[in-house]
Image (tube, rainbow, N blue to C red; front, side, top):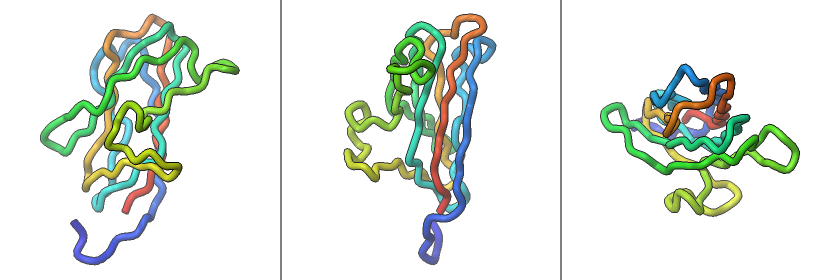
Length: 134
């Protein structure tokens, strides 16, 4: 923890594309800075048929599952099929249920996703994360 107050600083955003060749291996989708980070958005879209993924938080030693999500077919890819909010407080009750909701990560902690089964060949899942480092 910092010895002086830290305020929100540099934006930290990433887009990760998961393919069939990634299998069910966890993919790091966000790494907090040396003073930690606040994550405001984690969304997933796909062109596959209802794949599921697991969202995990790692403190450098242990990976803990936050939730598992089923992505509707073509979510975030066609009109009327929105991307899936992976910070949905209805699925992860510890996330504040307000418009300014966020997930706090400690120094150098990471978020990762792993597919529960391998994606169909030539299909993808895109995971977008937006946050700020302290």
